[in-house]
Length: 107
Image (tube, rainbow, N blue to C red):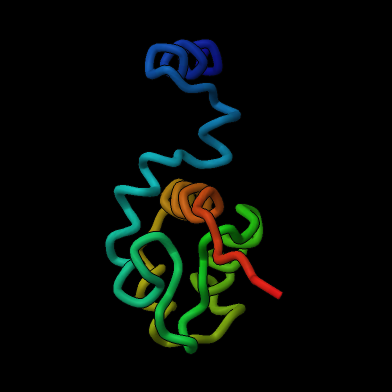
């Protein structure tokens, strides 16, 4: 019964449960304002010491955020930034930044 209600709610909202599990682009865009201070508006940082997020693989970005939150990755700034993010927040942010165009290298 609960699964049926979840599916009906997802259909009513115009998304599938599987799509939500991967993250929501628009929600990630809305949540990315804090990230922009270091990583740039579209995930392309102007400062070499801050990683560029644009175009990174969604799963990689998600797992990095989880690792900062759990303490597996150590960085006091990122630990503070992710401490209150939900799993959905991290999936949404990962989806948003993965869809941004990264810089193209010219040889």
